[in-house]
Image (cartoon, rainbow, N blue to C red):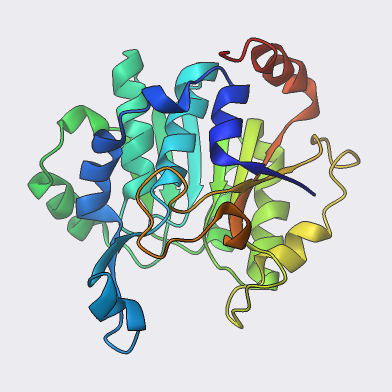
Length: 257
């Protein structure tokens, strides 16, 4: 699989990485994605308790939406809402009444509404987020009539779960599919087997372009681990439906110099 740096992906879709307002995504992440290190981690004392865990994913989602004028996103795994809010901001910035459907059995609708009320963000960012509080294997078949411009798969990270989410969602993709948590061989986590399922996909046969593994996670934000790019063994996998690949390639040819 071709491995590409997040900055180069942005350039390929016509975005100058130096023009990205990191502070905007930092504020969203402060309330929805910031993480705390365990006290046993040597970096807890050396670098601090809190860190930005892959805020770049929101940047990629935002610019896929704005550069390609997308109007809908299906998300498997709401988490704390970072990705959905980045998508909501993108739609609001475009002046589009975009659709965001997020599937997560761990989120109760009342809790979601209360949480969104207290966040210091414009209501336009969250007004069209629809939470489905079922497991993805139950919820996805009910969406057969719907198509989504962007599908973000960030749910059950097991092999079976990732494979099921792909099989149940690929027919609903209008253009992009983005997978979270692809681990390169040097990164070992017994609970995350996304890469095993992703590596089995027959992309062209299933109607998708050859995927890109986007190397991210503190590649644009300050990294208090001081990792060089080659040491980051995690990324997200981006693919495009074959019938829309020409649009992606057309925009790629007009990258900023």
